[in-house]
Length: 329
Image 1 (cartoon, rainbow, N blue to C red):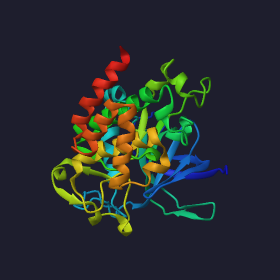
Image 2 (cartoon, rainbow, N blue to C red):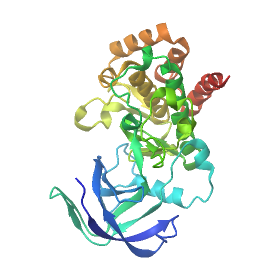
Image 3 (cartoon, one colour):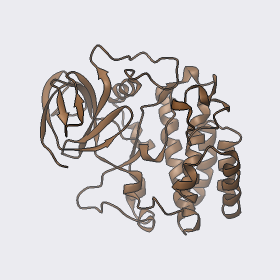
Image 4 (cartoon, one colour):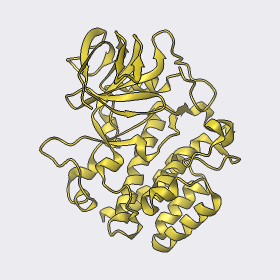
């Protein structure tokens, strides 16, 4: 539902001339685009969105990263990373398919959206370019790609881009993204003269497959904990399994999680969302790998490296880069 809520804001850091840093400004909340665990995203017009964080107010937010994997409710690791991104004046991130934020700040008045969501005064936010969720960008949510002609190419390119972006973030900012699920991956909105959605055939005929993407950084961890052994069940909410991570009793190092998650995404693309969300299940995982091995042995080897051998992002990127380069020949 479209609305028009005037919201006064204070911009603390920015790359936009019309929203300079350390200034007061105003934006118009148009409609809610999505709700996550750590914030809600709204369309504010001009191909921009604002993510307003839950439980993250001035003088009441934890910015020093805690030891636990899952952030506390009022801990905001994401905003810390976005600040570093905005202060980076280089264009290097574009070569790694990463979209950077436009400006950050906090609200100057409280507002209620649609009678079911209230944000307090001085709540932190980040403004980003308007992006399209993966499954809206590509209409393949219920289409397993294992039997589609271009499925092989699409999956390899997808894994390559995601690992390239992840490795760039890990290398530059020394953080590891622990939540690389499909719903957290979005593509930059196309210009009005371009098509809003396109199929796989078109994506390999034109520039669309070079589009930048953005990731969700709500659950990230610094490298200093990267070699610590964790048991999944120690930080899973409600003792539920999470399909992107190993089995609950499995010990692992968080430095292996991005590759593991990308591999699960590849299984989701090849075999379907319904199967991937039943993981982690060792028997089912082995069945998935065997099915993929019959059709695409090199993708099977990549998955085996990520899921069984527990490779790092860099190691997995090295492997998938070889497959990606073969596509260009």
